[in-house]
Length: 269
Ligand code: IPD
Ligand code: CA
Ligand code: CA
Ligand code: CA
Image 1 (cartoon, rainbow, N blue to C red):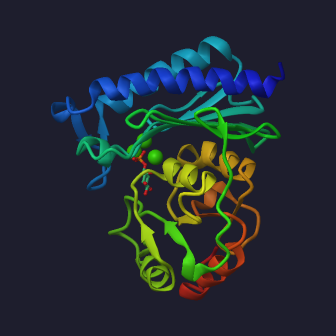
Image 2: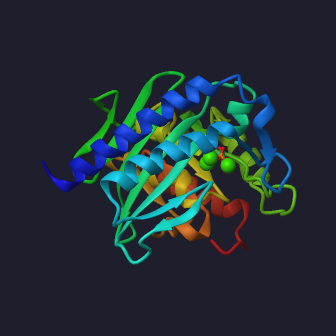
């Protein structure tokens, strides 16, 4: 078994264990929902319990690795070339309202490159997995991106970051612009599932600003292994720290990039 396969299997074990916790807590966290600073930026007892079990499993198997977890920050050996990026509950706002669009997302960067990704939606029992060179799957069956080649025939997803009230670069203009040019733009509320849905062809493209490494680490390799493309808005190499991501089936990548650039040509992409 290759190392990547081992990493993939342990990440799967962790995501499934966390998914059980999310399902257990669903509808029972009303008294344990707090804001993290910005209005609407919630954290619940479920986020924390999910993260705890993921950390336990990863630490047990990979004590020498580095970890970046949404609720705990940086942990482990920061000099390691292996970095696990963990979102224990992606879609907390949905979860707090019992809107069934949320997931566990666990991605592994090796020397800064996304190599392994597991996204688990426990409500729908959908397990998305990928590793570099090993393909992408949904519930263990191979998945592919869509073949939609025209923006006018496409369905897209996007999202809005928690700082949207504080900046004019809040994605509202882009969302309106693309809503006019496509068959629709969805705002699912879970960045990892947005990427998983690009990977399995349910949507043709996804873009967002304000995302963190834990939101997208797993989804990037999933889209790539499913035949899609992930870049910065302008089509250049993705810089995760920029917070901006464009992921598509490949066919609409250039045109979607051009339209995003047209909406906000003066931004530092
Ligand atoms: C959020 C979700 C949402 C995206 C936000 C993220 P969280 O993650 O992925 O779809 O629009 O930017 O912060 O806080 O629910 O883990
Ligand atoms: Ca998230
Ligand atoms: Ca989260
Ligand atoms: Ca959060």
